[in-house]
Image 1 (cartoon, rainbow, N blue to C red):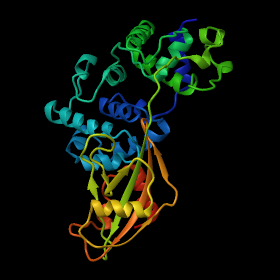
Image 2 (image 1 turned 60 degrees about the vertical axis):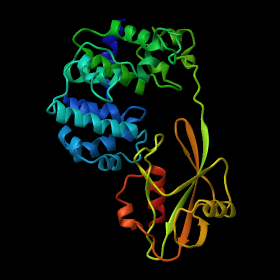
Image 3 (image 1 turned 90 degrees about the vertical axis):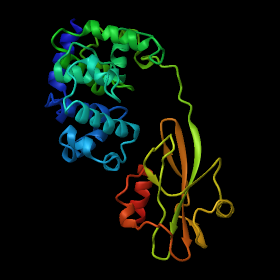
Image 4 (image 1 turned 30 degrees about the vertical axis):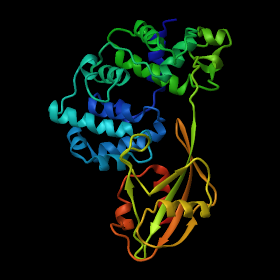
Length: 346
């Protein structure tokens, strides 16, 4: 069986109808690739459509403010992608006159574009004979060829890229790269793949050796940190509040939030009042403090589990520099705060 030919035939019969597959415009392909990193297609598609509607060209994206970009990205997670996307758009628009480089090597010189994204753009837009390697490709190749190399190891990327390159049919990089990624997304899925109805069930080594569930090998485990956040929703007599921008490095950089007190455990009303007396976050006299959510909200990120309480802190008089709620709603927030604001209907 010719692996590459069979894979392409499968793709042409089974591929999803996705908007970025109906174009070779590098701008749209680049947008889709950045958005779909660590994101399912079903989740990323609405964002892609909103972005292409709001920013139909790379110039529109480049000329937008970072806050506009982050607001549209809100809820998609991994916000560094959005910030890098914006910076790369500015580089392409203002330094390259809106023209994307046309080769893998030149694409790599752009900010925020790594080997995978450069290979995707080069092959999908320009049909350059360069292979892509993402999680789907690791999984398909490791199972079909019974490759036990730990995909988290230092040499794995080089090994799998070489294997993918050997399979790449000359002149069909566009089709083959999309086919192998689609096959991994729809057929050779991480858990419980339907091997009985797979075009490779008579030649897949992992299936023959009953190792499908064991491949690909990935030994490194993510260490998860547990954090406790107390968000303070200040409200003065005019119903104004306090909003702050996260400027420190780490999660949610340049997004907005309520004043935050972080502790190493869940705290009570009394403990929070004590902390506020030690580090007052508003000059006004505090009238009352109470929880919005009785149970902790657990917000799971890749390396962190955030345990969150939102607290209503009523203040006497008017806040100096307070923000009204209509203005608040226009700002980009982490999705957990955005959902809180929407649920409480301030």
